[in-house]
Length: 198
Image (cartoon, rainbow, N blue to C red; front, side, top):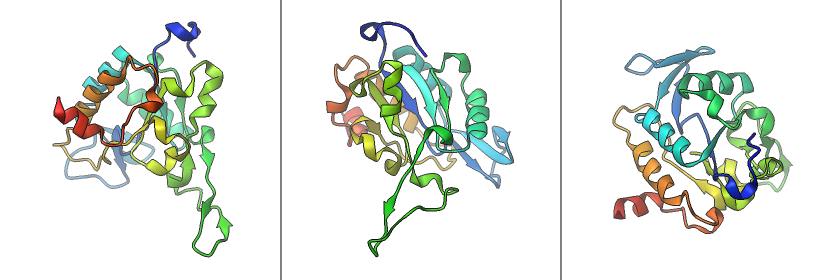
C-alpha cells in the first residue's frame, strides 16, 4: 500500500473483474478466448488496455472481485500490463458474506458459490489511509456495493460482445471525477447520460 501522506495521495479506484473488465465462461463464445484461467475462457472487454492506462494516470487502482483469490490473482496478472502498479489484488477472502432477507421473514445465508451475495465493504480499505470520500468502486453488481452505494459506479454487465464501448465512456467519466473533493457526494446513478452530454 501507498505510504504517501493522505493529502498527497490520489483517489482510490476499486475495480471488479467478472462482467466488468472481463467475461469468463466455462464454454467458449463464437471466438477464441483471450486467456484461459482455471478452465474458464476469459474475454477482455473492448478498450480494456486504454481504460486501465487512463485509470492509472488519474487514480490509485486496486482489484477486488468476489471470485476465488487464486482466480482473481491469475486474471489480474494477465489483464493488467504492470500488476505491480496495483495497490492490491483482493478476492473473495476479503469480501463479507451477506445475510439476505427471504420472503418468509426467515434470515438465511445463500449458497457461498453464488458470489452475487458477497459484499465489498470499502471500510476495510480505510486502515490503509483512504477515507470513504476518496474512494470509488466500479462493479456491475449493485448488491455487492450496498454498504457503499455513494461510492459506486455501475457499468453495464459485459457478456463478451466485441462491439461494447462501456469502458471508453467510463474512462471519460472517471477522468471528470479525479479531482473531486468528496466522491461520495457526487451523483453517479446516471453517469452515462452525464458523459454523453459532453
